[in-house]
Picture: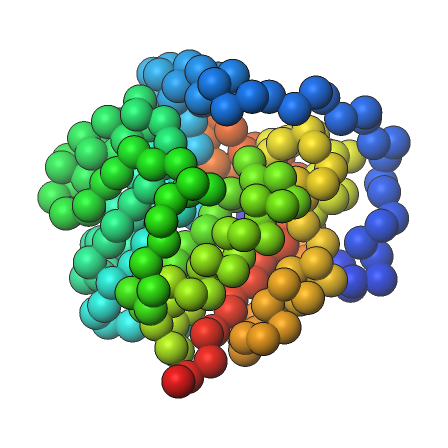
Length: 232
């Protein structure tokens, strides 16, 4: 794998190639139909291996506790977390994806509490999780994203960790995965501001080639963040 290329926050608005016009926003029903179709194809859309950024933070994870994998898809991240000894809840709004994830967990011999749920409309718990993994959750509009980030903070126990990965706005120039809507994508400054009331353990923008099934493949403009809810 190529070494990551660090990107400063000052570079966030420099585009490598012209940015295509945004596609019209899909309704919830249209989005669900699209994702059910994508997940219904043979194999694993984003591969069976867990996200590399999540794996790289393994040393920060507690040896036991409760974790949540948001928009978990076919289970690659939740199954990995469960394999590390955590009690894992996993959510996705596609019933096709959740069915595949349940089968994947059974094949790997781990237990995950899967649920079909729209995370935007979900009634979120308070101070329940030691870890939340939010990997490529960029289906959310800016307003939904702001709500989700606040719900993540509340759902973490004091001292709990959020591990976040997504695409930066420069990803539109690469076209190797992710949504077409520019305002669904991250900047370092956006994430820093959203979690200003937490401890930001790590926050970096970088460019790296990733290979996650057919869904994420090639050089990509990425953002990785680890955020800790302040102790009580």
